[in-house]
Image 1 (cartoon, rainbow, N blue to C red):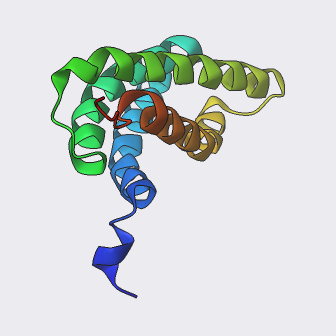
Image 2 (tube, rainbow, N blue to C red):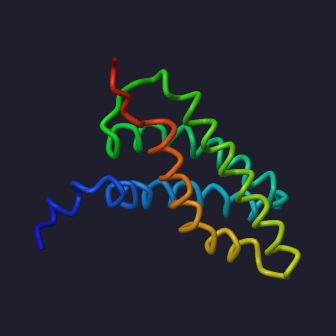
Length: 129
């Protein structure tokens, strides 16, 4: 199988770049939990820092976009995914699941949601009429 051909797929590139972004974001989340922050605040801080980091990596490496004017839409996508993530973190917390485990469980489902929303609402190509 040709590795170059595999990485021509945007979703595969999104997952690869997402791996780097996830290590960054989950690292921030885990560090904040370690320092005693509430999971909601830890998730918020990880999301804010992650969005700033991810905007460059996702835009450039996945969607080949260097447009800074898309930041507002990108932030909107991640604000929405933060809220979804928070709902599930709260649910898992109420079920007695560790915050560390909950954060790890939600990585892949949140990646699918973020990819779809970014592709559909941030980086979609519009045909000029």
